[in-house]
Image (cartoon, rainbow, N blue to C red; front, side, top):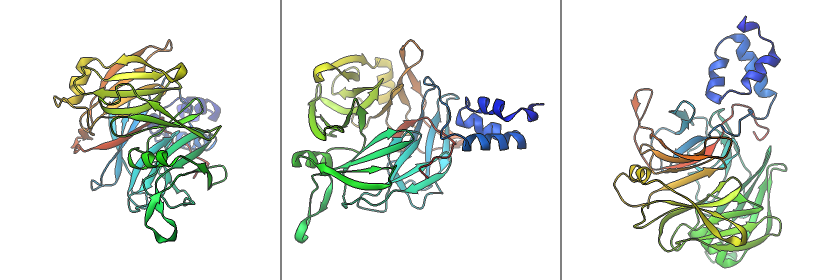
Length: 367
């Protein structure tokens, strides 16, 4: 009988299921529910194939009533709304941490961080930073099953009550010891640019944590975690790009950008000698569909993971995806419809911030 299959056999099956399929399996019968629960507690994460596409998880950039996030299941090609009513306060998305996400509360002007899993409804506030900062750059380095958060720059209170000043220091949070520590200083000009012109997204590649400025002419700033030194990289077409984002693709630092008057969005990869190499252009039909006749890249956003790059605008406007589809390394372009309705109910379209991750229902030692 299916209900009498031994646990070790069920565990092997469960380990190859996506989170939505595992949730369905848990509701099949009491034995499967008990076995799935035991399996989840026996592992720190689900076994995920390298070639399973990641899920896209999005949160509103501004408050839109009901506190929830939206996620796209690439296997079934459908959207889900996940309630975030387990959170103590509204949050904004900062960065993925493996299968988890790093968030910050919206009710604080200075930086506070927390970790949550919207699929398993787990949440944990991180300790306060040593230095109270406003609008610093945030970076993440995952060393499974632990992680490190880097916070650089930002505004802090000036000594002797002199108002606010740029904070030229870097501090890190290590989940193994659960505390923040200041690890060094940084050039003041880097602190200014990381504070004023840099969003929270970061990319870790080959020992360096990278951020890109958010206004023309674009530049990339990097922090070598081994030598504690800073570097700056030029960007192709830096003064012409309307939008530019750095992502990681197959371990390499990758730049995605769209230029005024250009037919296609371009993708470059950083090679030897810090030289950028053009590796791909978005097909014109996907560009027309993404831009929707607006002819500008200004509101375009992009996220990436080793197996895929996603370009998007609003929740309901759809996404252009360039991802690996075969074991021989072939990459192809796809269109993903936006989230216009869920369960027959219409969903309002609004600006979002998205991340890519492989979700898990397994408990984490972080919480």
